[in-house]
Amino acid sequence: MAPRRARKKAEGGASSNVFSMFDQSQIQEFKEAFTIMDQNRDGFIDKEDLRDTFAALGRINVKNEELEAMVKEAPGPINFTVFLTMFGEKLKGTDPEETILHAFKVFDTEGKGFVKADLGNEAVASRARGSSHPSIKEKLMTQADRFSEEEVKQMFAAFPPDVCGNLDYRNLCYVITHGEEKD
Image (cartoon, rainbow, N blue to C red; front, side, top):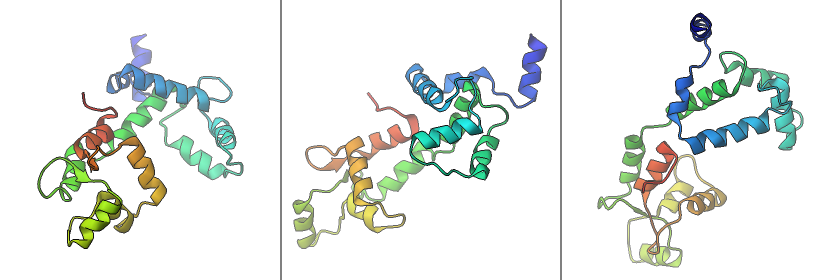
């Protein structure tokens, strides 16, 4: 059995240590997603499974080239271990926590660990008094890759500001990079 395992690894197959990258609940969530995508229940996600998954989501006319490009991202047939490995590799591409923290610290000039989310009328009144501290909502909606009002609502739904209207960006950065809140 060892030669077969070594041969599989040499051919680009995934090793089982990918399971150590995720906790049990994350693995279970990936397994559920894999099961949903494996439309024909053969243990592999192929082009037809992807086509059926897109159709189930309401996107009917997916081009063959698009599906083939997706399948080619994998080193071979996409079983659950390969699927998990691909997600692990994508997640490794996420900016390190320190990089994301540094981006938020630009808005946290006093180093408190939080930024003003958006206090509605109070934020407007503050600006009228000459405050030069725009909310993170205002920055997200007016700078670079602008967020829509809906995207801001989704972010605040997932990471609600505290009662004072502050967004704990340290916890937000931890969740982005680790997938779960700090205790």
